[in-house]
Image (cartoon, one colour):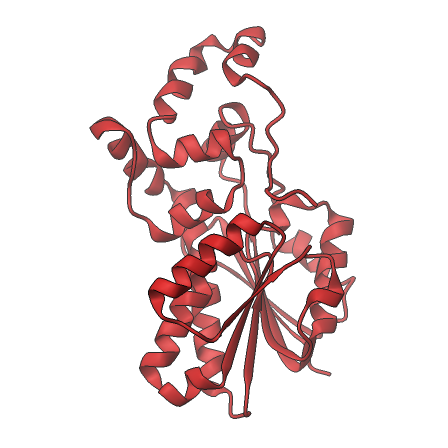
Length: 276
């Protein structure tokens, strides 16, 4: 599996735009590169930095115009909706952790990227009860060593010690810890075909203990953002609505699958339970 979800197919996007007669998009291309989100989307389509920048939500860019453009991109409905999947994952982790009465609580993020949801959840659990944080273990699994290196640095500065980092492919079931209480995966489904996605869902089911839950999401197409991503950044994502997700989960053993559209409307938030 690739170390990043790179879908870019042209060595030079400006040359491709000229060949296609889309010269009118060239000013937009160069302007977009001034913003952090635009530059990251163009250079590293689907990267963990792209996602984490939206989660953090603080504008960055080259010069004042770049920062202003970045703020505009972060305020798009698709970006605000994108952030909801991180919030959903964080909040379910905290809720289930506080409800958990067992001697341990084991949570995995796969592939983790920068596991912002786990880090914030760990902080919240620590604030609610120190005892809860001591019996909670967070596992972060990713194939990219750069992801794990950045995560390790972030964890050190956060002074969170109940994390374990695992370098492995998301489809290597043997690398997953056993008897997990919760697995979370956001931003991965958009880069998988249906057969691969069902395979991934089934791996997650098998690694959960009875009573465990799987948290994931799916992006619904936003026309303006998709046009920009496809034409300016060559970021090609797979979009799925509730009907598509129900058909995919029907091919898994998950007994209860709850689908909820976020308030903005471009993310389907999924909570799937393993009952037995």
